[in-house]
Image (cartoon, rainbow over all chains, first blue to last red):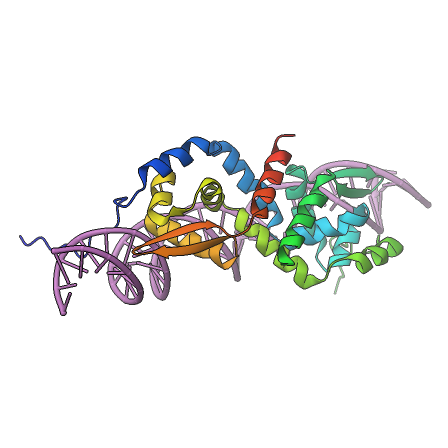
Length: 120
Length: 120
DNA sequence: TTAACATATGAACAGTTATTCATATGTTCG
DNA sequence: CGAACATATGAATAACTGTTCATATGTTAA
């Protein structure tokens, strides 16, 4: 039987062990990093970003948001659920109407931070 | 022919026109919001977040990152390409090895901002 | 030049996700 | 109560995305 390996792949032969060890120690734990990714994921959709910006100014009801952004009521409602379960927006019911607003002041900071990065 | 509509859906009957108009005027333009979502989307994956945190301390080569995070070289390479095209990391070649590092200081601020939100 | 190594890339696949459609829930008013 | 309205939700579909596999590119040293 001929051993005919194509070309051996890099299997960590080139690792700089000291550096890797040092970095490993300083890394946040896996759960934190996972949660952080989940957090940013919520901002990573243009529909949700647009909703957040709409709410930047005023509280709005679902219909207002849908009208404002040219979306269906259903689509908005689904996304508001995502935003709500991520604690980015909160809801207030007034009769038939439900008003949504930003749940947290520093959501603004995060959005502004993103914009300032783009401006470079 | 019987007209038998199920139940008429909300078609923006409840819109608060003044509010909507005011918000519309203050909204950033569509392109900005789209770019912003694209920007956050890059942070919205735990592999990429982990890579960014690994690079928080030191520049690292592809093999180091793969070893450090328990990923294949290929997976890391693909993600580095995403990070690079989003201007989050930059590459420096030294012989066969390519070292990656964070491209921008305020990437740190963005990561920290996310963490501080989680801590609430 | 050739072998060995480090990284990059294209295609395929699997898992995820945003939207739509249909319908349910919850509220007000007559 | 029942009709009308505002919102929510489950299921299905379509589009997107991350990983893997196979292979290509680029670099060094013998």
